[in-house]
Length: 229
Picture 1 (cartoon, one colour):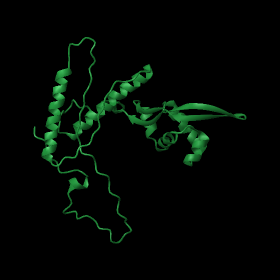
Picture 2: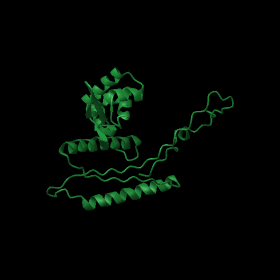
Picture 3: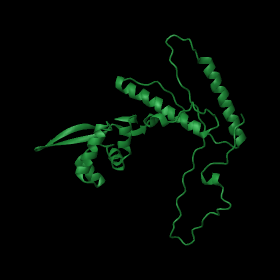
Picture 4: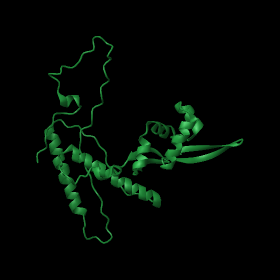
């Protein structure tokens, strides 16, 4: 079983998004037969069997083993991956394209970069899996808490300069046999956890004052402050 599988076919994406099939995929983190899944999920066996066949057709589940029980052969399935990511390539012509409006200060452009990252790395993983090879990648994930918007802007400026320096030092356009790599660096605020909904039955549940509420605070973000260009 793979850690992560990338879904690149629209039909497979549609199959994975079906609520019942999504439950079956989650349940198949541990191998199981249609009868076992029906018991786990509280669903009719015939319905589970139908959805299993559809998931198998789209290579989201696979046959783990067959067990002989008297005159009956029990087919045991497992998910092909522990988790799945749907590639933006599924959206074809309407998938995000960062080349349309590149803007370092745009959250939508950062999202488009992330979408392209999923699409390109997904394609690499698919090809490498077929060739039974590994993909050479590198990633950094870090958190930084800024004391002010000015500090955040200064950090972004220093980071930009550092990356530009490294790229110019190692980039060799004429290197024979060289391979092009993409470097993506992003900076975004971590979304705040959604607060628990107030109990509607509680008579003294206080509602926020709509006139004084700050939309940015409600969304878990601070008011927009641009970085200096």
